[in-house]
Image (cartoon, rainbow, N blue to C red; front, side):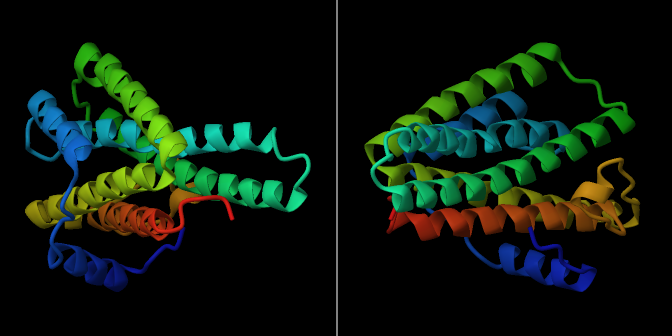
Length: 218
């Protein structure tokens, strides 16, 4: 993933804040309203952790379907190669979401935020499992539906992170220090970290949207 400098990150934040959210479909609305019901509408690290637990699963679902497809492409090596390239793309996106989760989990631990095992441990896994199967089924029936659902989710995440920075000016003064910085990137502040995560989510959204009109292995 591309890492931006502080000025670029602020510019991308302004772009997000100046852009309306997508018009989400029923399943996306159901997911977001359920999260608000369980965790409240206020943005925060614990809610972001839940968001990132869920964010990985569409890429896992697509990867699973692609591996199944590869077992039936012996007569067309070129087709198998294109599937494999698609798997690599999904893996990069999935790994990026994993770094988000690891870093946010580390911040929660450093700040000593008390979390409920049921609410912040078990329930997010249940939601993620449900979302995985929905993404998998949609991808099998009509891939563009699964890509569009993911675009909705990533658009929601992009705006949540960028708005969080705008609503919490103190993040500008908090230094970002992490054992994962060497893997994900160095940032001068938590504000820039969350701007980068928000930008990553936009990149994922745009990648999914490019697949909506050509959502098949070609």
